[in-house]
Length: 408
Image 1 (cartoon, rainbow, N blue to C red):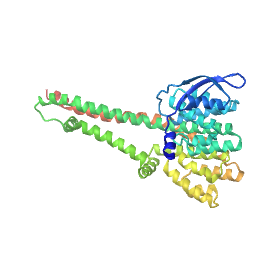
Image 2: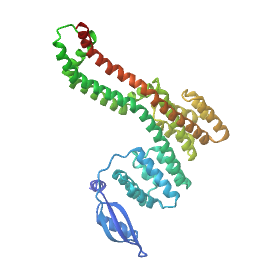
Image 3: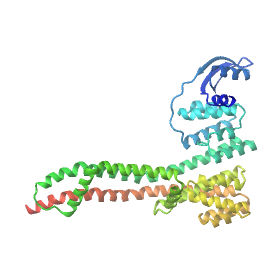
């Protein structure tokens, strides 16, 4: 019976209530709280010495999904407000109310409610691992323990902004060729299904042998017309299941991560972005005073590639047995010589966080330069690619007309 009652209490639906009242000094105060009903709100406010004059349930709108960029913006806002001397709970209230995404507002209100009941900020964040990873929570916990939470939040916001900037640049570099290939396939499919059959009817009245390129294009067109549903289904379904396997299957993920690093043009870009994120993460953890072995727990996953995650696990194992960080990184046979040299200098001078931060700055600028170079390089390649495909189809369709003109 007690277990059932406890279960029903845990599953009790809660709502967000906006309230207004007067404190012990008669000052008008306002706020919001999560509760199952107005009675709970009144009881909670009485315990705080507030006489409620107005309690209103807020109508929750459905919001968009919460993205890492939203968390980065929230972290920057929270750091700025705390540096300005705004109390933590009030800062949460201001950021939550000012956010345009109801999902983010609800998340922040949930965290605020936990902190309001006496839970530490890091513990409140750990209840939402989908949005606040171990690195985020560990840094917040270190800031709370050292009494420098606003400084750590500022570092964390800078780290997240730089990480999201790198991800955005990588996506923009990959998006252009991918979108062009998709558009080219759609255009070719439309030509094959609707345009080529019209030419076929015209050519059937010629009564002459057609050139080989024309026959090949017409055969492909017949296949498209007969099995267009199969082609689109196989390609669409194949891409969907492949992406799901890449996202959920660890073995597929490892194979693809290795393959991405070996791509002719984009492999170097992805590799440098992983190095930038790896060094930036470790530099941020070191600056927060997190011990090296513990910091390496979060660094591997933050790199965004299982190859670097596996290498980080080996580095952590070696460092825990007394090996220097530089030697362990050298044994991984993955990091550029510049990063190894700067790490060695950092270990000797006792400023690993500073040297790794400089390495991260360098590789982030390298990523910027490569993305700009790839954009200018891909344009002529894509133009040639489209020209060969579309131009080849057009020429093969006009060859019989040229041949007929020569006969006449």
